[in-house]
Image (cartoon, rainbow, N blue to C red; front, side):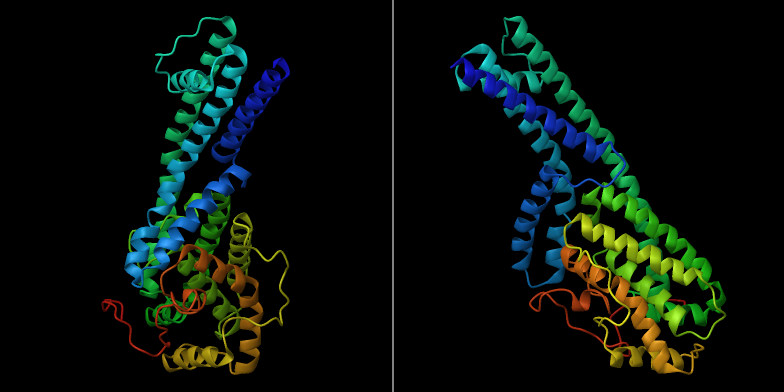
Length: 370
């Protein structure tokens, strides 16, 4: 019996230490960490939400449901931490007190939540009660401090996503973005825009691999998404680098690199990354015929284009191949709203919205910039 109590005490102490370390790595340590506990909570809840959302045929209904997923995960993580600490201390109380498991649960719960209704008489149980109360308060304090950080990062991310609606429409398109810049006479200012988005991608990589729940925080407007915004700007940069007849500027190249590195690392965080670097000649989800439609559309709008369309397509494909798979995988993972060249080809057929072509009218409010 003594050996059993020693084993349970050590197991309980290990469980408490492992849980606290997981919480510290998740909340405090500023680097990517997806431990077993975090992955388990994320994946279990995601399966539940996706199953329920999959039964809804209307995208707006799925969006309203999936909008709850990120906040629910944030609340579920501290609940899981507290539950594991309670179980760990319950094992230690049982080993020290020598009473029933019911009494150990009663004492552990009273200590963790600092309720104080369970009496502890020995020095060993008092030490356990005090330390458990401290750990419980630390976990709650960490979570209270954690929430403002999450929403501050979310707000910064969504500022750029919202601004993209003005310049690329809803749903956002790379062709629409470039065409509007041309109408405003701002094609020469594209490098400045890409520099802003390079910074955005860099912050995205840092924050969404440190705090994974952020990837599932949906935009206030159901037609917006950080994933479709990322795809739109990466395609705009790829079209600029490959197709537009403008003086060469490396900023578009840097933006593409920042973008595909960010998307790859976020996909790796959720375990959906390919783990292999694509080759320039690998196929992409965009057909050459689709590219030709976009090329003609920009030409009709008066945007200066390179004369060698075939070479422009090869260069565009060579850029797109770097971010094509992680972009579509993340669009599927997050159930992103419809956007051409992104979520329109990522979701299963029964979830996929009707695909519109570049030249077809969209049901959006006419902008004063048009």
